Amino acid sequence: MPDERQHLGGFGERTAAAHLEAKGYRIVDRNFRTRETEIDIVAIDGEQAVFVEVRTRRGAYDGMAAMSVTRGKQRKLLNAVQHYLAAHPEYELMPLRIDVVAIELDQDGTLRTIDHIEDAVRPDRR
Image (tube, rainbow, N blue to C red; front, side, top):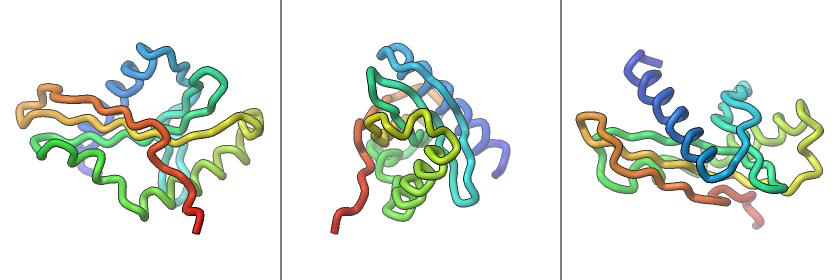
């Protein structure tokens, strides 16, 4: 990953963590990696374990960050949650959800919006 993308991603994750903490979430883990993907933030919201995907976009049109969570990414996140629970069984009996925090920046890097989408990713129930 090029340095610019790493910098942007790190900024987004720090911004998302601060946003969640301001809402009363307790951050319990960050950057949990599997072979396919990573979970950016793991937090506790009341009695729920929340797995958070952070998407940060600069200079894009509104909604671009949230729309970048494709079906493929959703499948990888669901798989990563299973890996996380296997490694951290203390959370497996808790209600779970996967949220997306979409951060939009102006071209100059000024924060435009933070959109916290709760329960954004769910298992496909076909």
